[in-house]
Image (cartoon, rainbow, N blue to C red; front, side, top):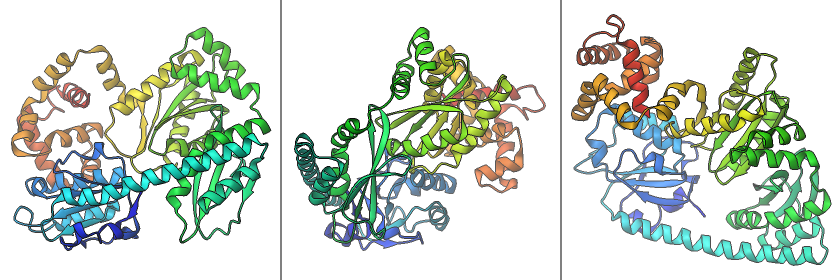
Length: 491
């Protein structure tokens, strides 16, 4: 469950630190805190999943460059944490102004803790409350689900099931089809409350969305948990009312077969039955997000609009989809794939979500390969938001598959060992600078923009890199080797 950030700062364990919000982030104090965590590790962002109040003593931040401080807050903002609370004192007398500006631009609230408090005590007080509330909500959610199951067993329809859910949660409830048609409702919706949406699939196919509206005084957390617990019951009721057709069932089985790396003959049977030509061009899409299941309606709608045919399948925190692409030639298919990626970049996703598009598959039999490459591309991508093109990571994917780790590491060390050593000793960012410069085609102006550096500062960094690498690689034939080494370093 969660509490508001403003309420968390008023707990006794934190008030003695005299917390103070340092930057201007809209609605910062009304952000939901779902957990309190403490860490001095600067690379903590990939281990966070969003909604955390992160406590830090500031010692690690005080000893790094301004660039690294900026990268730290950007990474945390990308993960969608609720706020960063920094303890000021001898190690970190004040939070750097530049760091605050970047955090504000990224939408990350930064809180100053002006006195020392035991972080363990803060976590125990707030987290124990969150755990207790979660357990209570789960119990009430199960009770609501059992009551709905009893109603269904006695012949109750969708309106009766939703009435039970509404009575148990204090929320208005309605079930809406993917096309927007209301299938059943209980209570009144006035659009002034908070609406929680839960997907209701039938045999893996999105059949409806459950909407629960709560107002002041009602427990939104309970409504969400009870709604999630009621999905199976509502799915059974929908199955009785409108069972999926053969084409939908074939699509479900096709996606399961692709996910499991099915045999060619199996895919060639299921593909046409679900609407995919055997020899048509395809590309897999993988969405990794804490809200992957909730994103399925939006992804399905986007695919229906952009491609001739598609299918999707949700599994835990991952949503996979297959797109059939227009184009009688590979060039036409590649163009359609680029348009699909551009559309996916416009998709609104929760913070910390990543979307990958696999390479172009020549026929349904190559769909598992496209899916596998998309997943591998995500594994190679740092945490953050955005759309990843597996084709842009072709070098890394090939190296990971074909070169032993020792061979890769040896090549990187021989080409860039001096740069790596400099970064380690000086806490510099020469390796990242070189990587961005090479990835932009040695375009100094573009690299400076991506690194948030003045062009003169970038020139100074590049000059130092050239000294460590034996000269400007554009004039000594080492450009390809150095670029390959930076790519292998990511693997």
